[in-house]
Length: 532
Image (cartoon, rainbow, N blue to C red; front, side, top):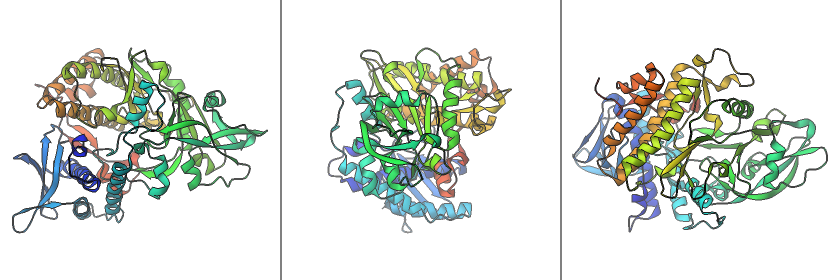
């Protein structure tokens, strides 16, 4: 992971910072997805070493923190051993080329996009670092909401275990006005859809009224759309009328295509035909209908005190093939009903992006995991509901003392039902929302333990060196307590007995150009393991 440590170095320009960030991302992916499974990585003399076996190339990078999962904190340039037995620096372009050659030899597949995507991601980070305003130019004046917006818009370097975390298809001059990292704000574009072409569900009109939409012509309903989307796919379908930009100001969140309207306290999840990291960010028709169906279902699934859900009670789209996915929009409920005076909501990914210096890290961590872990595990093993509680899907509510007091789970696109735990399929839930038992376990283990908790644990350990093993022991105690509550299910017993964790292989899925749902997983060490 690249941290604020890089940004603070004097005398290093944004191009150098971006190149280091890109090289660390690619190197971390190689270590996790290539080196660890093959036994070709070691940590020696303060460096993580990696052998690219098919190229017979030795690489290394200094580490400032050694992770028990292999998710080390890298520092300085990646280097390769020359024929003269000397170490020489390797920039992100050269490292991406080595990765491409190694993966071609290993997989038998070629990918002529890969190096360019790494380069484009690096160039995006350089642009973001150079152009990001020092302060939010359009604050609301509500300190809690402004802090939340800042957390959503702070992730300049992106996913630390993706080879091209800031790659976005399209012209940078076009997307710059919608980039959350540039602290942007804008107004949505509005379509008027003839009544006979409207498809939707839930109280869409009642909720969307808070966005102050333009008047709808007679016989039409309004539909908010991302302005970038309409520049990509103009509304050429018969009957649609473009009402232009309007309504309250919205702020793009970390996902880019989901925006938050602070004045309305409402999220709008738009379709966006842009490839960001692995996926084209459009709302498939089953995701639209599934959002409302899952909102109804999850209202009947008990959650412990201190854990809430940002529901998605309404959607609207154009009931024409092609246009339905191009303009499908989901409305998500806001933050304020979950806040008390003095509370501050923060995106979990922002907490994990830099050293997390809290006064009492063990107590803070225990309070954090006691909120999040039982809720996610009980939903899965007790109710068959799989929450993808990765760092970007959880909003943490901190009290006035900066202690975690509530967790808000969000993004029902990531919620799936474990088909082995449902004797009859619930009405209205699309079949695509189902996961088999193996997929369900993988997603929970990866999203909760590897992506989320390992990332946050590492951020605490960056601020408190040497504490990481202690934090994993605290987490083990919480998992063991959940296992006891659930009569010792085999899924949790395996974790406590040391069965390897799994990590989503973002490098391999990007290399194969597969859909995100088909992403492979790799085994990583399990720090939860205790005495057998």
